[in-house]
Image (cartoon, rainbow, N blue to C red; front, side, top):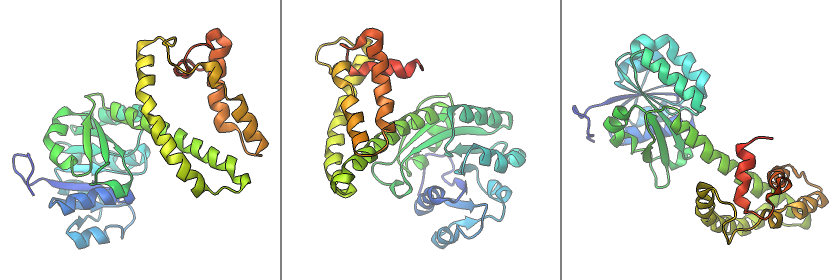
Length: 294
């Protein structure tokens, strides 16, 4: 396989062979990239080696083997633990860090890379390992525009690549913001499943109802966004905060003998705006409760 790189022979090193790191490395090997892998615990590279990858005995050996170094480790501390001793070996190389980190941690490591003479790109993976290289996989990037442009053909092997700018923390910010929506949605589904369970409804039966309903409701995002961006929560056609009050939902949950924590959170956001005199305004106004913590 060839890429847009000038020498068409980029050697890649992948540090970290958890389930995600293995999926990333596997996509590179499948595409014909000369790939060297390293993992803290041995044995995880066996399948990749069978596919044509090389395995390095140490992280240093792996770094020295590749012009492009991909890092997919447990957390920010793990990245520093592995790479701090190798700053000299990394100098002059390119580093793409797809470890899940906070925006502040991404920016801190970008500064570390700059001081070490390393070209740096930070990534946030919006996919589970089985999705890598398949439709629906999306990877968010920020940091060096030069790195993103040079290696984009390689990055696109993993999923649709979107670049957000030179601020290395932006990819992480988008990543975590999207995950916030996902986890709250998942928690809402589980709350609903817990509500109906005492009536003899299985989680599977509830999921069959919830999936199309929640999918349809995502169509409302753009409308909420327009109201929020316009800053006018009195626009006609919105469901009011008074109508959105979740008192009955909270009470029904308690009657079913389950925790009300999930819906309590939303109810608090609603009630703060109602209590401040905005009950006739639209539900989107709860973003003001989020923007201004109590």
